[in-house]
Image 1 (cartoon, one colour):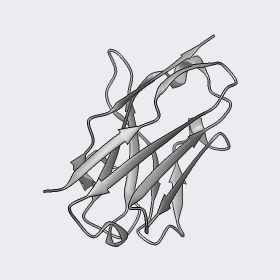
Image 2 (cartoon, rainbow, N blue to C red; image 1 turned 180 degrees about the horizontal axis):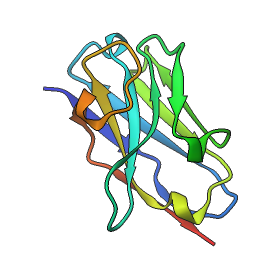
Image 3 (cartoon, rainbow, N blue to C red; image 1 turned 90 degrees about the vertical axis):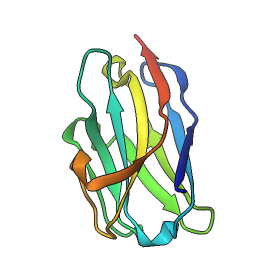
Image 4 (cartoon, rainbow, N blue to C red; image 1 turned 60 degrees about the vertical axis):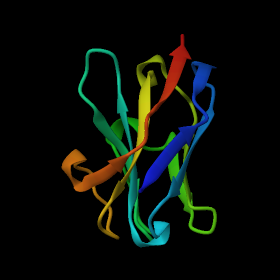
Length: 124
C-alpha cells in the first residue's frame, strides 16, 4: 500500500519561508515523478510543482516560479517543497502526490496516490 505523509506546514508571515516534506512508502520511489498541489478554501485543487523521477526535471506554476523549489531525495524517499517569499495568497492545504510515470506531470488526473495534506497559512 502506497503512503504519502506530508509535514512542515504551519503559520508564516508574508515574506517568510516554510519547507514542506513528503515521505513516501510502498512503491519504488525513485521510479516515479512527484508533485505538489494546493487547495484554498472555496477553490479547486491546483498544480504547484512537479519533479521527474530522477530529479533532473522540474516544472512550476507561474505564480510560484522564483519563490518555490521542489526537490527530492531518492535515498530518503522524500520530496520537498521549499517555499520562500510567501504571500497571503499561498494560504492553502498543500498535498503531495505520486504519478505512475517517470516524467513530470501537471494534471491532477495523472496522479494516482495522494497524501492527506498539510495546512499552510500566510499572514499579511
